[in-house]
Length: 309
Image (cartoon, rainbow, N blue to C red; front, side, top):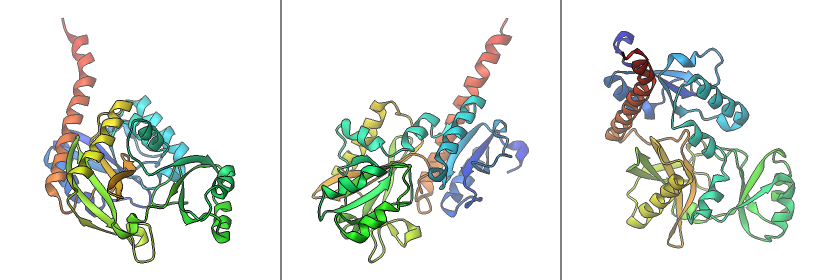
């Protein structure tokens, strides 16, 4: 598509390690172009990007934001000051960037993996009160199993590993859920509030991490009605908290003892598993186009009022 025929300029926010449209997003980019939207890849923390030249920023592969969390929040603040909307909304991105939101969901009766929030200094005492239990420890601000540990409370090697964790983070301490290995972790994809498709993710042999960079795999799967209902209860809780509008969300969870437990809600930069779902990519593109049109109408309405006789 020619730049001159594009009705909107859309920044696709990515990271310096992924400075191009990823294969899973390729059809999404094509679908946007068909709708008169020019998608332009921009590294989120590149100081040379002229953000006000874009109608909006679609958050995609900013897969390092948690390593630069303060700068990420400052970037969102800057976009807000410039009047450049983000998709998803910047308030939602801030809320979702710290995993202590899980405890807020639990207060809204969402079933999560039992979670305790502790500072780094408290970890030894917390683990001492959980002898012989298999646990997972992760920072509240993290992604891709970064700075995440699994081990047995009371094990000397695990205790030494815990002392090496960064001291300036708060941590979630959770029991290890064996069904992640034996049955797999679910990812349910919702676009514009509607369920689209799902995958089951499984770790490599001998591991517990399902991410592809750790050898994990994913395959299409159809969740049962109970799993869908649990995911939708979580999204209803997000709406009740004040974040009801989202273009995309990935609900990650595991079925343990017959109950779907929320592990994370990915509302910032989730891998969307679009490669096998072109209709889903088109649905996202249509929703983005509608959001851009509404944003343009809001920007232009004061001008129209000012020019009225």
